[in-house]
Image (cartoon, rainbow, N blue to C red):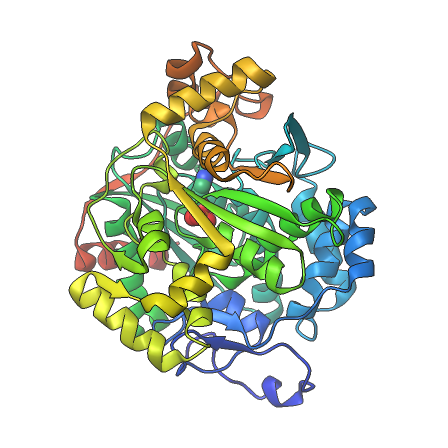
Length: 481
Ligand SMILES: *Cc1c(COP(=O)(O)O)cnc(C)c1O
């Protein structure tokens, strides 16, 4: 049986425990603990809560002064209540954020002109993904230990997810971790952050292909139900609901610091898989007064084209200086699609099937108008990114990484000076030193804990873009340890 089986525990739970449904409408309804371990739903959909809890204005106001971890427990509690004790949950949250190098966890920095930078890169691997994955690693370990089970985490990464997942899961007895990355398409430092972790439970695979090929391989392994069950496959990719949930917290906290609920705020989000910006949508749905969510894309502009036209149309992937956003399809977009379709799983199933077959999905004028009320977008090319890095440094003395620069470039096009604009700084500049150096002639320094990274030995295998070969590898490595 799979780990998400509906055992007798379900029936004992009270009716007000949050239920999670699939965006495709036919997978079993689950509670948070099972959603955490399941990842992709069995009907190919993504899990979402069956209702959205509301934050009270008083609570939101108070969050401005609460420590980050306390806000995190409070905001996430309605989504997890009934599946974990509150003091245990609080301890896991505390442990997760104690690894961050800044006392505020996610400091908010003023850039002038009502523009702010929310620094999400103070975790162990220097990208915002640590915020979700440090917590998810603790939650997985807790839940699996409680059940006396082990799982195999399988993930695809365009660079940052992999290292964040590996840091979150390394050396845990309950977990085996297999991470696929596109060979030669991550930065050297991104690769080293993954491949220099020599823990027995960590397995890095370089796939001869793109990030989307890696993501397709992972999806295919999950859709191979016998394989999935035999290996107790599980995901920590951004399709995992727990990751989205952890990311909602910093939207809430930053908005409160800037005067919510009275003061509306906008956010700009450097976007790839749409997980981060969807967390912003959730914060808004929970009552945070978010005026606009600006989606920043690099040359891979499927989302800006969609937000202009209502038509989602696949094109090839172009490598850019912001590789964590070099993607063709944004997997988390399906969660927004579900909302735009009135939470009708059959409609989502139909649209996604057509998109897979024809590479095009037309949502029509009404759904487009709903999306445009909230979302704005822009595509920023590598030359503009370099100019933004240089201009930001000259104007504010801040070095920003190319992903953050995509956001700043998009924010400049949509900024209404009467509404505070928070740009999410998704990576530390030292994670992308070449692009930063090319733009301003300065080499950003790695924080002390990573200073010797380039000297550490690496371990990984290279495999073709072939499902059978990759499944065989997973079988051989995870069965022998
Ligand atoms: C993953 C990543 C993104 C994209 O985030 P999504 O949630 O996939 O949209 C942006 N910037 C950096 C640095 C990342 O690592």
